Length: 96
Image 1 (cartoon, rainbow, N blue to C red):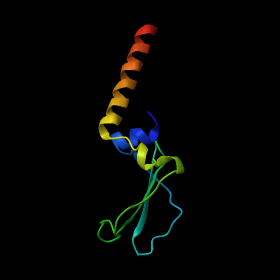
Image 2: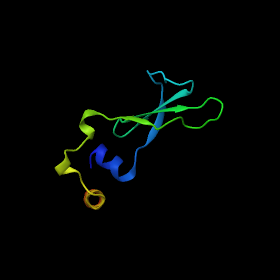
Image 3: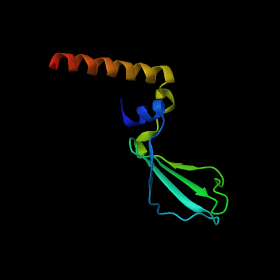
Image 4: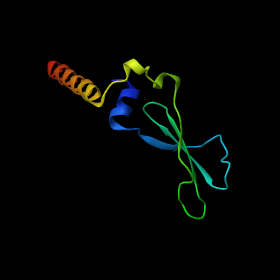
């Protein structure tokens, strides 16, 4: 399972990183990056309210997107994951 498939199935695993952007508003920039697929999420947080200002912006790596005819369904992603798990269990049993 590729990182993008894992993120589509399980959602991103965000961690905070320093950003190289400045918000247009007076809010504080919050930049997060996924440790699996390297997608970056940029948000603006109100300095007095702590609320998000607007919607987050996502910056995806070039290999993240699928063409329209190859986007896997949730069922297909789950089957990929199950097959990978079964395969790994079989390998582990052979080693033991």
